Image 1: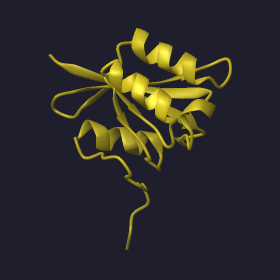
Image 2 (image 1 turned 180 degrees about the vertical axis):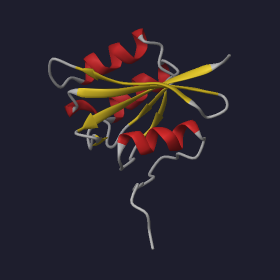
Image 3 (image 1 turned 30 degrees about the horizontal axis):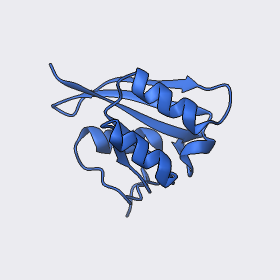
Length: 116
């Protein structure tokens, strides 16, 4: 069974507005059918783009979903063959569900609120 690991830097329960300022990361793992198999929050001792990059590489993450990200960090992650989906805004668990379903794109602004 093929699975994909994804990191989403957090600010509370939302996707962090900046990759390098996050002190928590939602790590998710989903399968090819769009099911989320693992969803857990990892705590960091402090904000650090280098630490997040190292963690993503050592955990063999296939994708990072974030708000803003420095070009240098973006280039490093993509060079390491990590997909970066940036400029995303919304509740992290909702964003993860969209990613697992194959419906998440760079620049997406998501809301879990129902519209009437």
